[in-house]
Length: 330
Image (cartoon, rainbow, N blue to C red; front, side, top):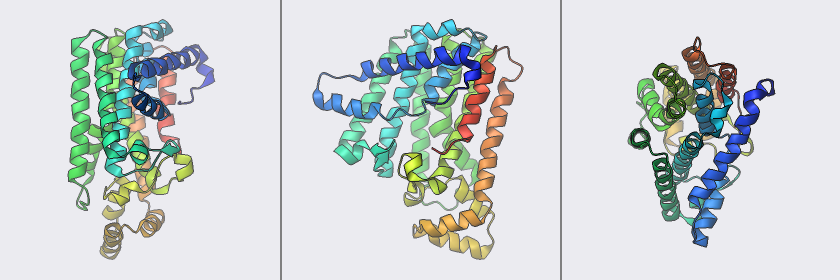
């Protein structure tokens, strides 16, 4: 889970307790009477790591009530937090199939253990359970919004697949891809968490913008960790973006800032999947620093989007959450 500053324990302590309840709801929802399915669900439940999305969902609910932690007992808010984590987990299972990944959260991926067919069906099982749980909240508009978000996630992945091995991918297209495949769901956590808690429209939109900005920053840091992270620390297979022909921000900035000779060398290394040479070129350039600076800019913009709102002392925890997104090594 994301470490919450103990200085804000009035909110952090009940929030941590609420996340335990969310995990219990998650596990109850996906349980199956069939041992084979139950085993898979138990395995994927271990994928839960930082729990960024449910944390933001709950914290946005508290913020929309000006720091009133009693909202953390609202069953609808707790269910929503479990729903967004379930959707996220489904995308991880499907991503591992697309990337042919072997490791996730320091353990074997579902596709490595049981094959692609089982992994695809398990991802579908998680999504169907997410919408079953969402329907129990009894808010048709909320369910429709979640449907649009999930549709956008799929579009983002499809556009990324279309641009595999595309050395002409520009920053604007890259940004739209990560907005759709990652940031839109994080934005929904802020927006819908506040909405379920009864927040005013302006507050809901501001928290939605906050979430989308930190979602972009989160993905950029993920892209950086894929090229310079330690696999044991990161907890999943690194170097997959290069192997699968995905141009991420560090590589885009490397190509953009290269002279013609360096550009040709980088292109050849990319096409031959020479990760060592590309990493050497990245480290010799300012591409990783520029990518990280962009992530920090997004976090600063996220914080600016909630500044001046009456969120009580939950605003400090939101700032901490935003900072944790970029200050991480996994």
